[in-house]
Length: 235
Image (tube, rainbow, N blue to C red):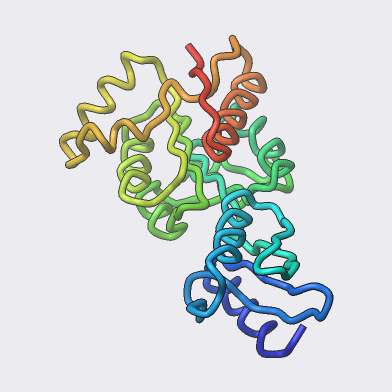
């Protein structure tokens, strides 16, 4: 890899910009495609292959104008922000890490958000959710899930998530609880379109009862949303 291509790739990664590394076979000529890169002379078919590789998080081959290209996506890391260091979060963290997410657990209650309860796998943020969300800055590669049932924790996190590009927003609680939550969010300026982004009750409808089962249903729904699947919710 040429030094200038490597430097630009590292810069994109540091700035959390999704880019695709395009390598022409067999001569090894390389280009970068993505935000912040000069892509005007890249053939439309190759640009589409780069776009698809980034969307699918998977490398692919592309045949464009009689040339073979290897398209390698370099996306910012997937992130999962959990609000509430509860039993469901304890079960969900190792599953999400195994699925490729960088996980942050937000809870100002230090007795709950401890290294003993979340050994290896999650960054523990001992800030109130509004400050934590400002610090974490959820983006289009982020999922946000609130788990506390407590408006003073969940509402601030949901308010910030709805103002972000988070690809998934979920909230634990019954339909009655969620109706009250939506009324409070409406007072904060969130209309029906914003409220429709919240998956509540959170998780797929797999009949989950225990904390680990609910964690499975939540992670499954996050993956389903990210991959564009259409599935039901947990009752």
